[in-house]
Length: 509
Image (tube, rainbow, N blue to C red; front, top):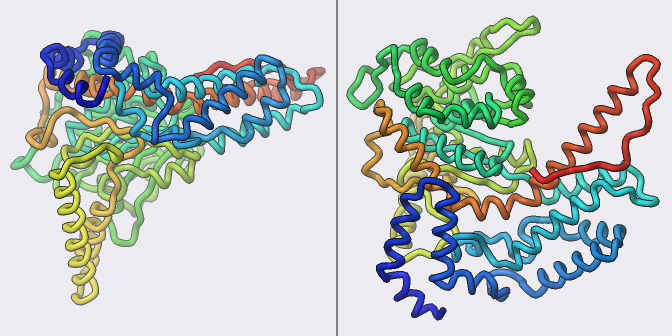
């Protein structure tokens, strides 16, 4: 279908009806059926079957795909391993570009999907095989190197007050499809949501949505906490803590990780000029309680008092952690801590759930003149504000509190609010009034469903761009589990364990 005919077709009543049905779908399966029909009628299916595109080197990808298939069919394990060694990274020949996932609703170029599928199949094919002349350690090294080269995905949940409950719908949609990354960060409201998930298994988390339990739990408010513009400035943090305790179990970051295998990361900001922001997780702060971290990350200045962290000591007692320091809302320092996650976990692919209206759009999508003017105005405003703040700090006697406030404003200005794949709500600036307002049960359930529906169109891209990483993680997890089993067996009295097994089974996550 030509671009001109496509343009007219997409304005027809049939497509308008399809768009409405897509927006009101009740499940991902229903959405996908409608999306597949949309792709057939719009010509997107034809685009997917056509390998050619200026956005990636389709010829080289096709040659590599043919080579991998030929080597696997011949049983040339050494040759297959050699080719894989040179070609495992997410954006090979440009195939990871976001624009390639914006044309069709159900996926990208069929060639790219076939290539990624073949690499995953080759990795699984080689993992359990007994290579002649290739020792166990060398095979382990290959998969570890491949995993390091390819990188990992992380999910980052923004702050946004009560609008942050949108993230719960996002998580539900991802978990139902088996696509939720193991590395998750959250700030402010995003921290609360990350903690709800990070202290539960997939089954326990999905059970929260049965019979509308989660919506009722989040709106019950037995302490009658009043949050909103015009309400009293100071809110009883003990009451807030009791509210959060109903959904966040008494766990440290390390305990949560051991239970779920998820690495939850919570950003907190300093309340004093002598402090720096921190990213709390099972690596950097294993004994800190998840609940105290969430309370600190949610402490919006002027609404909540700064919070002291808590941690378990050597005998398991809850005690103050860094007792001389207090912490505030994590969004003020780093709403989306991409650089820190990259350094700590080897993350190079970011899925962002951003609930604040107006703070982001797809970085690679085409824009009209209105958006260009808006972006230019925003950039110019940032430079003016940044220059003004710098002048104030250099030319005037700024006290510690004011200096900290100016630094906070500077940090907010410089933050990046989007990632590689972005999930935005369908609402606009008119919903800002909901940020500090108690929601009804129906409003809460509607917010969950909005998160699900906003996520479904991103599922094909998330599934494909993260498939190789999930396959590598599954294989390495199996390798490490079997190695650990062998080590435990070797320490038993009178045990005569065999060497680590050379046949290793692995399934993609």
